[in-house]
Length: 277
Image 1 (cartoon, helix red, strand yellow):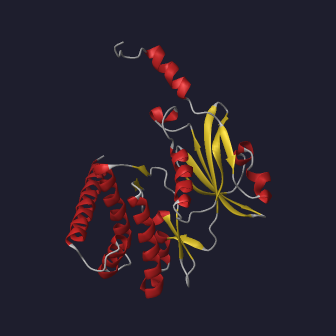
Image 2 (image 1 turned 135 degrees about the vertical axis):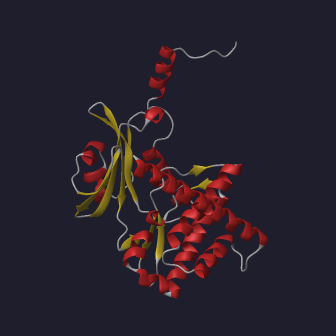
Image 3 (image 1 turned 135 degrees about the horizontal axis):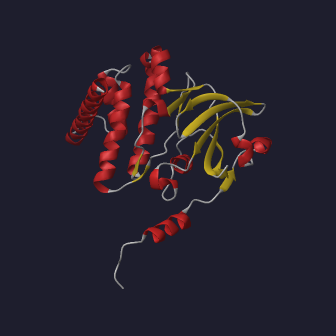
């Protein structure tokens, strides 16, 4: 039998069959059950707004059991992602579980799932706060003195390089490995956490190599403000597990700088169009 185009009715029926079903997973502790064991309770929670846009919202909830971040996505996503494929919320909770399986520390995942509310699908992700932690971008702005402390910066570089290498060797691309998505806890003995990775996934071949360069380029971009050129080179050698620059390392550095130059040109073009509008 030959392949023929779907009619409009058949396409709509296919979309309905693929519509994402409601579910809820609670993985927290017993004393957290009253707050997060049911999706409706999570949707009705009140807290301090951390961020918001047209598709999502994040609030900080303070309770007797601790501080939590509750992230809401509504509408199921844009275009066909509303019905088929992996949503950003699903990507986020699946990647947090994947990081943990690789031994990469993440904020503790308390609950997540999908719930239809008022006829619209809501997706919810609840994580526990990592106490006394700040993301690297915030530390660079507010605590630049940390980055001149040799032991602190070297330990942070070791951990970030190790976690990035684990992901890339497993064929995983983060796609948003920016300093704002990396938490550091503690000063005397810093501990690094990865979080907020809704778009990351496994790739193969050229896409995986291109994605790894983008991840490293984003890390380099964040490091330029507070780390010396020698420190940034040291980070790349830690990532590659090499003691000195090799021809392969030099080629990788060139690819990173090509990526950053291209990114800078795209940003300049967007600013030019925005100014003309």
